[in-house]
Image (cartoon, rainbow over all chains, first blue to last red; front, top):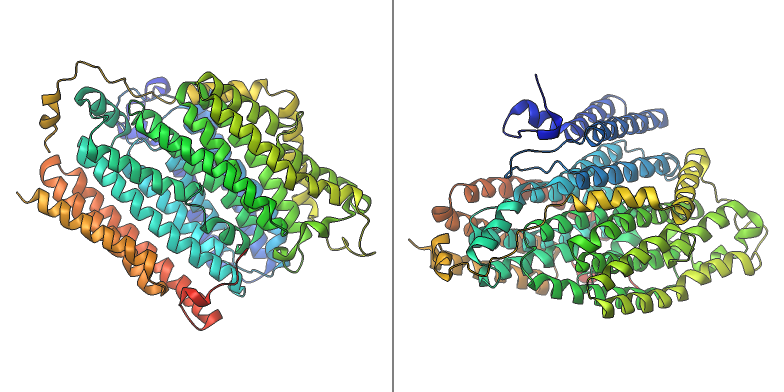
Length: 515
Length: 98
């Protein structure tokens, strides 16, 4: 088998196998874990073994991704089902890394909550597989299948704790609204297919350009429905009402996974879709603009009113979806690097924050109020420090990766002529200080309520490693962002931009599209 | 060809499904309305595929498979909530609020 990595011909099965190696290995890993837990699923030992096998599978998939990235693998044809570019590789790493961090946090959590359900890891692997397909999707069909594979797995993960009524309720709400959103997304896909006669991103872009479809009613309706579907998936206001309840009721490691990887996958797919297929359609920019404004303002304002730490983080993650939408609204050229950088920073800080919450919440992390963290700095200085770094990074304080990410989003928005949007982002960040800083104040300035108030707060060695890695990453990228920024820039630039509409497109050609 | 009427009927079915999801309070009925939405989309795909080629019909098969998977998971979740609350009426399912 002779494979030229720099020009993979995806119509040949050998080349296709190489291009899909990370996804195929991930599928294999999921099936292996499924077999392992089918035979061994009774003791805590079995649970841990399933976790380690999962980690190994994620590692192998990450290595395969690295191999493709290192050899600068590219596809040579134009109309493939799957993209082979840096954006996909970087997004895959992000998903695989988040999944690995989630697995490490879950070891202790599952034992503490006595969730003897090793299928947890299988579902996690399948969800991650769905995400990698979404980030690599070059066709609406692959996008839809990846999205559903991810969503269906995460519906189950949300309700994996069958003894918990809130978890069942969270799973029900997530399922009903997720399926509802899928309906919108699918109708959008159908209408776009009806308008352009194709489901391939690049070909949609070509059709829009050659037939001059950018004001076509059917296409715009389809685009609007697609945005509604994605709005639900990334929890953008006004499609956010499910998010706080679902994040609140789900097991905390799953919540961390949903707030980071699931959201990042939806964003990655949205970014590629808007850039490659609808780059020449101006209508979506305005819609995304309003979504971004509403999401930032509403998310931050409601977060101010929260007393529960978990709900506060849930609303904070809604607000961060708004910041990412600003990067999307800034457009492919300017916003892509900022977008990828912020996704990485956001993932690190959110995973660490949820891991710390899971450690604090022995016997019900839903009840942890912000005031319950009082005096943590005296009792557990390192954990308090880690949480403080996460909060400052979420706030966008200089010296953390959150600041650099926000800064680049601002620069991109201003460069794209979205000055007002940038101003609203800054104002929203100022509001967010009103709920991030009280956490730090509680930890460092308030006395410990009782002698044993933080006695149960244990992360375990693996959880400690997760938090240490995340915090170190946040501080490192906050001071030396150049390398990550370079990767973000090349990966963002690798997303093909849709061709511009030629003004000379004959209006008569629209009838030739066959409708 | 009946493209226009088929698209109209599927749009009407889809709207019916959306309003059903928004207005009904029983989890099972809401789920049925979601299925109605998905099948309205299937009708759109089949109608469009007559003119635009086989991709639309292919899509319908995927949608059917996914809808079946969703139904399996969804009904299991509905069962789980029934065990806890003894009802599948969303008005009585209100532990998470704030």
